[in-house]
Amino acid sequence: MISDRASSEQSAFEPDPRKFAAAQFQRANLTVPELWTYYCGIGGTADEVVLDAYLNEMVELPPLQVDLLHTAIKEITAD
Image (cartoon, rainbow, N blue to C red; front, side, top):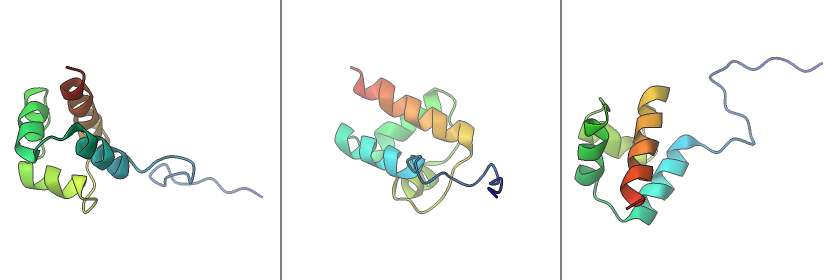
């Protein structure tokens, strides 16, 4: 019998969004203040320290904030 997982659990096949964001951030060669400024400009609400901790895989962010962070990295690196 297969049990239902709680929606907060992550599938073994889904990448950890923190690892993904950290890898994107490192490839983009950005500073935390640069990313944080852009992220806040598009509606992000986490402070700079929390954002840094998230990128170092130390804390979680709410899903909307994760989406905004990924959008910020994507838009910054699109130039």
